[in-house]
Length: 221
Image (cartoon, rainbow, N blue to C red):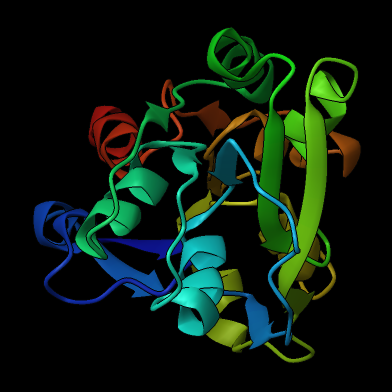
C-alpha cells in the first residue's frame, strides 16, 4: 500500500481519509504552527467580510461569535464557506478557482464596497492585491502561522506528498528534499507557484482548490 502524506490535520471521520484510506496509508500532519493574535473589531461598517481560509473563520469568531455583524460574508472556496455555514452564518459569495478568477467573480458583487479581510499575519493577500484599486479593503490580523521547527523523519519517506498551502511547501523543503520517485500533489495555484519557485516542476495540481478536488486527483493517479 502506498504511503500518502497530506500537509494538514485530517480526522478519521473526514471524507478525504474515509475515501482514500483503502488505497493509501495516510499520514495527515500540518507543517505549520497556528496561534491566535488578539484583535479589536474595527470601528467601521463593512459591506463584506471576506475569509481566505478556515483558520481565518475560526480565529475571527473565537473573539466575535456573539457580536452582531450586519456585513455579508464571502469565502475564498467551498471549504471555508462550509465552516461559516457550520457556525450558522450565511455565505453570500463562495469563490471557485485560482485567485484571479475568484477576484473577478467577487468584484461583480463588491466593486467600490468596503471589505474586511480577516487573515493570517503571513497572508499573501491575493484577492486584496488584485482588487486594491476597485474596492476599499482593510486587513484584520487574527492569527499567526509559522513553519514548525522540527518535523518527523517519516514525512520524508512517503510515496505521495500532498501540499495544501505555500507555507507548508516552505516548511517541508526547509527540512527535506523531494525525490524524483515521489509523487507531488498541489492544492491551488499559489501552492503550485511556491513549488516552482523552489525548483519543483513535476507535480499534479487539483482542478479545484477543495477537498473533493484533492480526492478526485489522487484517485486518478
